[in-house]
Length: 294
Ligand code: ADP
Ligand code: MG
Image (cartoon, rainbow, N blue to C red; front, side):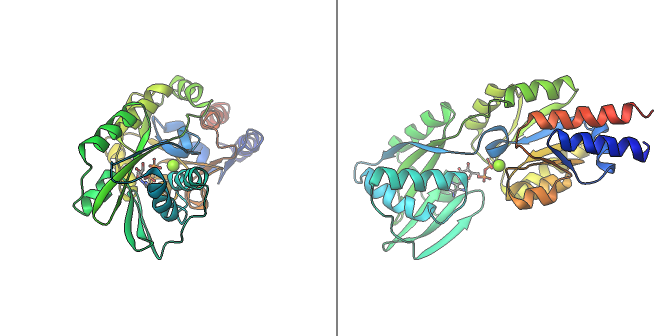
């Protein structure tokens, strides 16, 4: 590739809303055959809404939302923002301030609220504290997940008390972007820390056949390494702090411009508008740029 052609390609990229770290990045995109897509914030909008609250008979929605909302208010996770906003709206009151707060990456949050030891997160977070969901809540969780919603458990003082349903929407452009990526010869794979059933519902909606779900943040990088060990050349698209290591490991890292600084720093390319169509544009552009110089 001549420097001039690469510079032209880089300039054209900027016009398309694609920021390229260096001209050598264009060379990599030519070989890529697999594209791993983070779910939340990449394929979906990442703007979640609290849709429903299921409680055990011994508590109320208001009590659940006060305690869960107070904890989630201290977290920046998209799920946390949905729970905190939904809690403020549905309870109509100010939320208490947690005395003790900890983020448990990929699992949820924990802390002390009004003297109660509260957990909000995946079933696995509760399991770590030897708690399980009672049958009624387990049923509500299964139904929510079958409908493509994320079910979040709430527990305090050693007992599971509620299941919250949250969901975000697939970005309008995601299905078309997946079709274009396939037309470029790339195999798309959906990668997420979220539940298997939710991941499969989203994958079906956008036209992805392969799903790798329930992956802990620190294990996303191993998924990329495993695909590379199979001889694949892997692109990864992500937006979160939990995607940064995977973006750096991938042969080509594409960061959503709407995402976190950590993701943008780790990526080779930034998709300024946070739109997956730009991922297809980036790959087509680089192939075109390199094709014209042969
Ligand atoms: P993704 O890979 O889709 O971006 P994460 O790895 O951030 O998701 O989170 C994985 C799962 O952990 C979420 O789907 C959720 O069930 C749970 N979780 C993480 N953070 C929180 C939180 N603050 N509140 C509730 N649940 C959470
Ligand atoms: Mg994400």
